[in-house]
Length: 629
Image (cartoon, rainbow, N blue to C red; front, side, top):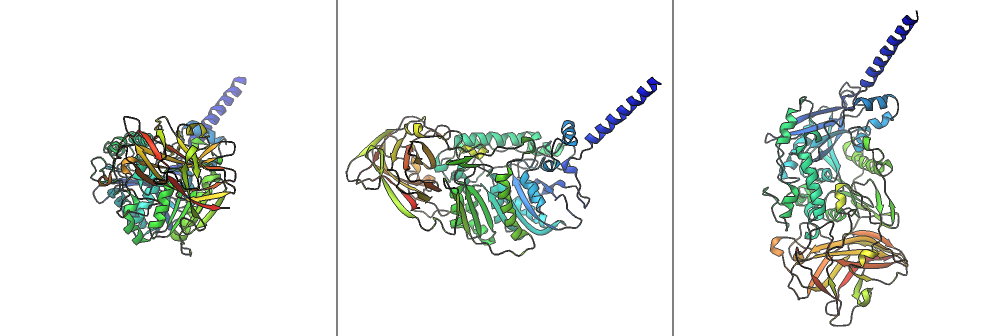
């Protein structure tokens, strides 16, 4: 009898365990979840382009999608792979944790899916992900980033979307960083279905905005970016096959075609704006949004643009676009890192860590309100709702104030230009110099740095952190500091440096920093300007877009090496900013000839010695757009 009872118990245990295992294993993977219409939420396929190249696309329906429902569509197009091969597949351990209630199932809607895409689905949008030509599961190769062929592909994708039974015929695009550029470039395709775009933290002029800002090779970023892209281009596990490719053979074939140029090696050969990239037959002007001004203006696609004061040169690109293009633009300039997931005001730093790496959820207090504004913007143009005409305006945050302001013009009204002169004893003076032949000698220190958490390295998604006291670093630099301010003073615009000097070398680099000096001596970085000496000539040609400050063409024909011992004027603007300098604090200009952790060394050999002129004949100075509070 006892044996029989034990046998029954054992059978029950086996049956129970088996049922539990089946129950766990049956947890549905996100890509296989069906909507009320009976369609799987995620479907992917190849689209064949005009030249026969197959482009991988994947679309995500809202979880509550109903039969025959026609919805607006948002595109995210990337060269960083639309998803990993295993990103949507949960292992048994993960499924068991979920079934046991150890993970909020609401959060699981984001597994294998970026939070922004989930939010867009929830707001009633179908989201289409695109692997750019020559990347991910797409076939072809990439002679240059954002090539004309790549942009033409997006036009065909838009046309395909507009023809689908689930489309209401209205399409928009958004994205951050590289996908931000693709979102902007889609505005040039002329597709009538394309109604609005929201590029976030993208580069209006990629070459001078992040590749060689000021003509200096951003070696730190370029090496990391090149290595990252090469890894993506050649590792089959870092891309996701389309539905028809059950065996993964097509994905392997696509990867084998990704014979893309090494970005870092190709960039090392570029010194001028008009240099060809690799063997592409193209320059970065051909791949930049500014070169498509005519078509973007003609299509009049409304834009909502997100950038940061401290993220590479994205803010200068956004302001130049605003002042150059005629299409309606909402520009938002904040105190964020690259991507907007952390507040990094150096005076009020609140870094937001990733909450859960496993589900790729970033802190929603920062990102979700941004995405809500993006979706509100798209609602106006992509849904069947009345929407007031977009008025172009700039909404910007003022560092060290916590305040947001709005203007329709740039620079904003109410600011006046204040000139401060370089004077003796490292003073920044409101009085023009009277002596005729006074100069400060400075030998370039090639150990100077702004660190690894600066605006340039952050393009790889790392933290931007300018909280560090730069007082010690400034001892290596040539500095000029004003008297303490008597009232709170706001700076908004692009400070202009007029530097007169002699150099012992034909080439060198100028790194000029605007800093805040507190009463206790702490020095805080605000912004910077950079320029390679051979590009110092101010061009008389028409710039391709409205430039914030003196226009340096960076073309080979305008190269002008310095003449050692001869006084040369170096005029350049610092990257635009908006900052509050408090009463009792001082303004400092710090001049360096290197940023060792970020840029190449100029010249490669030798140490320049400068004589910075600060006299009545050559009055080195800075012009600041200021307003007393």
